Length: 269
Ligand code: ADE
Image (cartoon, rainbow, N blue to C red):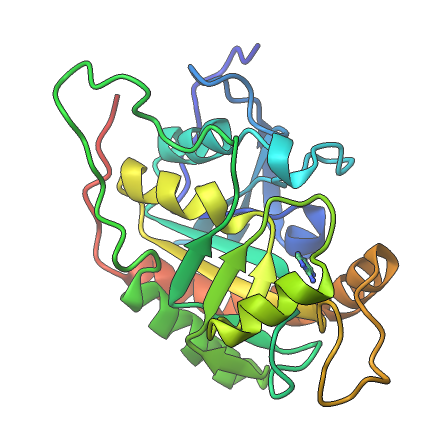
């Protein structure tokens, strides 16, 4: 239990210590929510001088990566961020590429999402106690946040594709070659296991949300180059680790710009 007052934060990031190791003044906060505990305590760190930007970090898989994608408590994670008062939520995630021109080590600042997950609690509204609530979801990713992330990527010399559709699979297994071909032929760009229901819950919570894919692999392989090995867990973790410094640089460049975006109305409960 916390015996101090809940801290506040300007921006939330779904990521762990790899993302804030360079930050100042980190404090930890154990949040509780009606949905249960989030995946881990939240770490709040300050970036910049003058009026620093306060950023809350929460590793969606837990500090020891104990929660597989289908067992992450997404509702508690998003609600914890809402309780801290974040005005923007940034969600970096590992992804497989479905196209040769989107290469491992590059980023995609997604603008669309296809949810192929099932069986996950994916709404804050299991009961319409105060009347119906159907969140709009035509544009899952906030255009202003996307713009800031693309600007920050350009400033830091990181290759980031502007727009792309992420198809979210249930996991924890990877896709078969047939599934992967289907996803590519449908016109989608990258594949991941956690953007749903994270993005939809952020929308229900009224928090502008941006997902940034760090491409770690070519999913089940490349038909244009049969020499490319299908994805393995080892490759995903190794490529993610090797490129973490790029995510860190990009986020650090983005934080002041994100904090400067106009306040949004994130309601209190
Ligand atoms: N995360 C990273 N690579 C992935 C892939 N190929 N499929 C699903 N999730 C991923």
